[in-house]
Image (cartoon, rainbow, N blue to C red; front, side, top):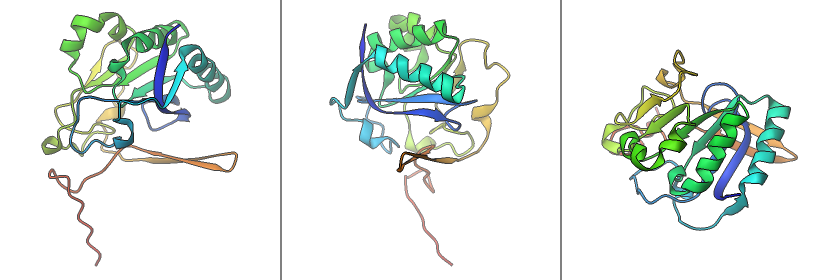
Length: 198
């Protein structure tokens, strides 16, 4: 049984891909995209280091409680933990859960070393975030170079990521508030925020 280093997870979300999804943010990234919306997940340090078995229990709990249709994997960088990632996506596929994965790496390069992982992912969003190519027309997609690759046919007719849509989700658990949204929204390609109050 492999382990994963997780920055955080969310039992159910309706804004991290089609349907209701269990979301895992992996801790650690070595790509270093300027303007990354998940700065707190970049450090290559232990956050929540846990056996995959515990994660499976939480996902099954979410399936029962929230009727999730799949999992969404975000970073940090999921492919920096290939052993745990491979086990997780294979387990998800066996349990009839769809998998959406965001990576800063390029699909064709990942194919050389991680073909078995990719075969268990339904949608891969690939490529580094490039500030000068800021994309304001697609949901959850940071820059125009990033591709939404439908590896399986499960979501072949799904246009979820093609909509220019920003969302924020607020959930309350036992007097604790969780807020989740689709990243940093810049006003221009230079990464500037222009607040104009009239």
